[in-house]
Amino acid sequence: MKELFPEYDHSESLNYPDVWESALFVFDTNVLLNLYRYHESTRRELLKILKTLEDRIWIPHHVALEFQRNRLSVIASQGNGFKEMRTILTTTKNKLKDDIYKLGLHNRHTLINAEKLINDFEELTNNFSKELETLESSQQKINEHDPIKKLIEELFSGKVGSAHKLQKEVDDLSKEAETRYKLKIPPGYKDDEKDKNKPDDFMHKGIFYKRKYGDYIAWSQTLDKAQTLTSKKLIFITDDGKEDWWQKLNGEGSSNNVGPRTELIDEALRIGKLEAFLMYRPEGFLKYAKESLQASVSEDAMNDVRKISISNTVTHLTDSYVDLTSTNAEYAIKDWLSTTFQYVEGVRANFPDFIVHHEEEILAFEIFLFTPDRLDRELRIFNDICETESFFNEDLFDDLTIIWVVNKESDLPALSKILKKHTNFNHNRNISIQAALMESTGNFPTITKLWPINTW
Picture 1 (cartoon, rainbow, N blue to C red):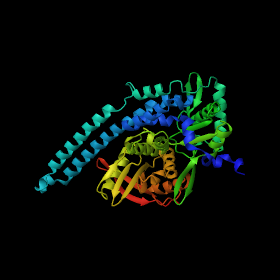
Picture 2 (picture 1 turned 30 degrees about the horizontal axis):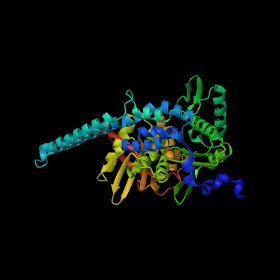
Picture 3 (picture 1 turned 60 degrees about the vertical axis):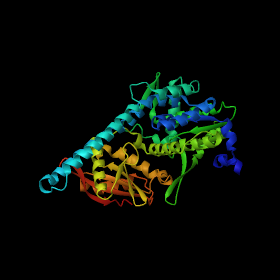
Picture 4 (picture 1 turned 90 degrees about the vertical axis):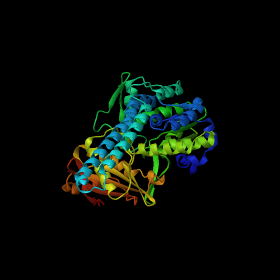
């Protein structure tokens, strides 16, 4: 019976050192784009490993195309963090002044020197702003020479697959992808809504593509390459953590990644004619590179890669969209948290929005807005978080509170109904959901009421 279903116990039969010694290493677009997100030291370590493997690395043409198309967006999103931090500094500084002056202490309490506090805080924020400027000066700029791009292009010179020459080839792949997505056949079906709110088509060298089919096109090109390999061994590295790449099992209140989807293993063996197929996320790749290649991999690099991977799994963490309303909501929530906890750490441009160290636990808070124009996007992100619980397994924090911010109390029944109908929350004991009423008080938004949401 075992020989009838090789995809179900494929990894058990492999000689891992042998696979690592002769396999072709294929990288997904997100792995290359992560080089802009990692700390410089992490980037150096990863590039050194790729250099060691330079005779055995390869990327599909569609991966190279997506890297070129998305590179500037990633650079821009990284730069937005500096702008957002300055906004927070300015807002916090102005609120401190406003609240102190409202107390009128300079008229009725001679022992409290409020001016000194304001001046000291001003000096603190100015010093931090200077540090931000120093860090920002080292950040890759959109319109400047890009050494990371140059390194990647040199590293993969002659190691990029062939492009499709005819529109019919891409159209046929798109039709296949459309059918597979409807049937939830991996990879890529979780991207099926990429064209829902904005145009999904783009053109390259006269050929039209749909963004949402990118994963399947890259996978198909990988299978074509696999058929040509003498070694019959291939290792695929992706930072896509969704269920359309990985087999996930829910149990004991958590979601566990047990390896590549069996459909992918089956196609790698059956269509790609491979004898060995392995798939890793960047952290796993670094871990086994350290063991199999004796590569130098620091603990700092492992932590950096792990955190970026968790961030990437939640859709909105790479989304550069930030508006005034979302900034106000996060500011109001932070102000509310500060009334209960001594120190609230903001993690803008990363996941979660805020972290609190309380007694011996690390508590995380993620903020969503309940507004009609953002609802589809917010629900998609909310579902991604509820389905992605690896942050608990990685011990990054102990509990996560998701707070939906509403503008009026009458929104609560509608919010509860929508969450119950459209989300896939699995009752994890580490995740709680609350609603918060945000109102404007003077020049600053405040949270005036909080409710637990019983949506199930």
